[in-house]
Length: 250
Image (cartoon, rainbow, N blue to C red; front, side, top):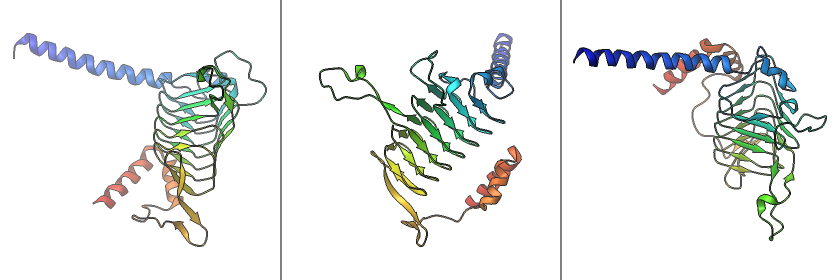
């Protein structure tokens, strides 16, 4: 290797490291938290909450409330209203509860009312909206017809899988698991699993019979109380959980 090649390699490695270190700092300082000026735009941005950077489209913030310790991934769009700058009235339109985790690339698009409970987790690229285009007039393009709004309610403890779509009028009970890719509309009870296009209940919990059909697989690695303690212990807690998962796999 010539001296020129060696110097070129060192320069490229140095630039590579510099770019990544700079990007890490940009991401860290671009986050919106209660300690940054961006918090003032929101109806509420709770203690310990964080919106990752780069974000998706964020507008209508005075009508958006995000609860304590909720984490919003990168490239997430959260909007209220058609466009920025509108007066949407006295009521909050998009409410995200406490201790939620919203996966990267998710879109939460509110016009009337979207209420997401506490401890709700989503995978990446989930789409949640309370508005849809109507198509009743066959003589007018669908995109030009007046939209229809219906409130969306997502109960505490739900899990919404990757690329699921939650349509206007949906009401999910507590602890509902939504399979990835499901298209959801309608009302669903507490403690069930829904899947498909359109989504239907494929597993539910009976107080006497337990889960029907019965669950398969190994028992939980840790109790729910221990999992709750680990989840608030930061990196140390996650490392303990990772070690337990590796031990079980072995």
